[in-house]
Length: 535
Image (cartoon, rainbow, N blue to C red):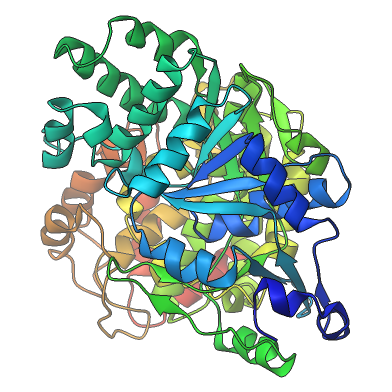
């Protein structure tokens, strides 16, 4: 079975092999989308194909919508050639269920795919036509956090961005520059409203997109390249909702590829583009998924709510994100990452079979996090944690590693644990001194920074921007040292930029020191400490 329009005509072969096929007239959908585009999506990566595109297919199957999605790629044009057009804009979604079973679905909701390239006259002309169409409701994005960045950490604009500020929109080369050039096309063709929805896993993502777009518009007005009214257009007639997305889409495991091949599916080859993008005609993903979008649409909205996506107000989106990041998922991930590295685990799912580590994440989530989490109302926090602990993290098909999750931990602790510590510190009916398992994880992270596992052997620390400053501090402590730790550890534990608070000022510094001493008592001390507290 090859993935193309012609091969799909033999429906029985696909269905007998267990593949669910699109249940709508795809040719009619493509024709209708060409005439009346409603949704264009920037960034044709795995999470888009596994989630929004699959939801939209359900709407097409049910006859709720008639048009499909137009995919636009503005960074790695090879994706369009090698993952879309080569396969007639079809893909296969493999859902990896926690019970070890697979669900296979051919996704056909993509109507066309285009390169966001001002030097490609054909595709740029079509993109301009789409943005000029008054019926376009939404442009959405999964372009990663870097995609919204216009400047380096020193605040200097990137060269392609700075160059775009000085030239006409139709000559733009930077990603956001090309987007704003298309908004300018819409402005010149009736200035119809539009909604830009970032679906990237970035806090307050809509604000980041807003800042990038308005910076470009302001620069072009300032340089007399576009009309002054364009500044007002991108602020008043274009909206930038916040969203929260949650779905894991790992690279395909060999076991998944073999299952597809055993079913007769031939297009299992993956390709790495010249820009180091991993692409394949199929994507695998966990079953659980959440997408919550601020209901701030200015030109009508695609009825994704009929497919399980939630439209709500900005405050609720923020609460859902806070619930996930500070209590129900991310802190548990970080705890498993820290202790997984120390104990030699290579898969998160294997850690969930470990008695002490399973108990640790339960205590952090249920006992210490839930009492202070803000309930967003639309998703129950306890149900969310139940799914994370019982379904998502133990899923053997999720080849996530503690080493990957441990990347940049110093940048994550303030949100993942610091917010809960602050909530305990502020609450009248809570005492920060009652926290045990969050401090244990923070002590575990300091122990992890030594780069010595629980067997006393060195291991490689995951990348982290603060390692150059943290390693010289922690190197003053040797394995087996359990006293005279304060002068060393206080340099780390008092850093409110790392933890969101000065741990000594909130009354946890000495507690973390004591836990660190137990974890550092010698080979095997990490395991024995976990058993002591989690038996």
